[in-house]
Length: 303
Ligand SMILES: [Zn+2]
Image 1 (cartoon, rainbow, N blue to C red):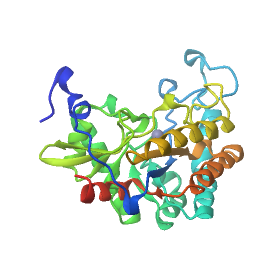
Image 2: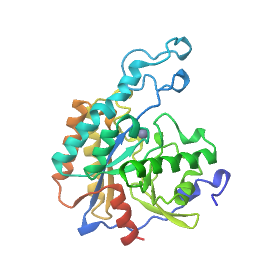
Image 3: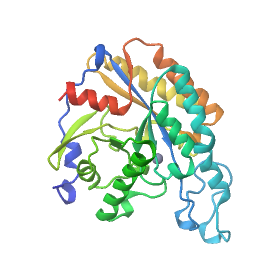
Image 4: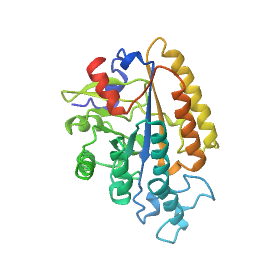
């Protein structure tokens, strides 16, 4: 049973830190994440993802007469149509694997991309049905149904069920962790309260929390133009985080996440992802690992 009211977050905040060690004495685990996302683009201005990427003045929803916001839809569509192939190419170039947070709707919108992600050995992580549908709007029953449906869609399409889950917008609820445990997931990725993974016991199971990247860290490509930074700034943030974690990892091994959103994988951003991976590769004692590999390792060696 999940504790109620203001105690609900205890399950994360009071979770015990564990002693991390990585394979072959690696100091830093570099966990690359790709985000393959799709929006419903439903003809309701209230649900539109508007003016998020940058560009012209924000639209006033009340003034909109046209049914669709084609411009935003086109920006959103860059990811599954174009950006994903750039990220896959760069990952291939360096021979590294990533965990792709994938909206289940991508199976319909971008079937070739979802197939390619799976076939090239990357991990598919359950990431809600669509980017604009968030769990916080759902009842417990609907939330369970959504999580279950997404897992089944990937199972049916690529033949493998995701073992991990990241909620779209990271907006999980006080129920998400318990539902994931019930539905057979082994890890949950929404928390941002730690640099390293940690276990929590819930509904009689042990779930591994694999923290994601806090959007305010500067190492976030989705918000870059809104926040007045450019792709090049992301490399500096990556390098800064890498350097500090690498230094600290002399005492205790650490994990660093680089999230690469397909819809932001413009040529200039791609160059930066490329440089980030190249920089990490220039150090010894780095473990490039998919989140599922980190989870399996932690369960066997760190609990
Ligand atoms: Zn997302």
